[in-house]
Image (cartoon, rainbow, N blue to C red; front, side):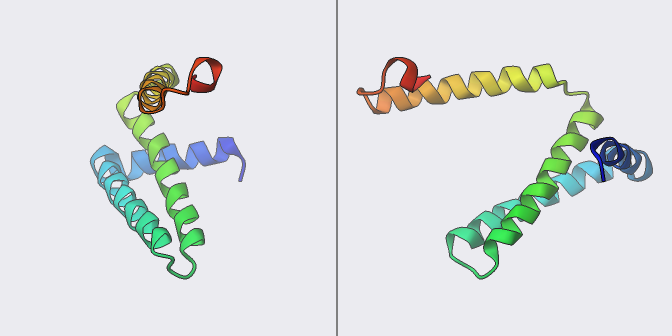
Length: 104
């Protein structure tokens, strides 16, 4: 299925099930991802494939949330840049040998 078809299916699901129900499903999917990460860290069988499946579900949910709540790519990119810069500063403070381009 190509990207345009996927996006159409996701938009249809919002129309069919509604914003509230889709938001609840997204919360549930985030919880399932947490469980999958835990299973992976504990070395459970097939945990890596389960982790990939739950990551896919949450990735879809992120698209749905963007669509339902009017979040723009620009808003996300701005927050990603801010959070990444903050993490870089934290890591630099933790390791005084990190400086310049390596810390960016």
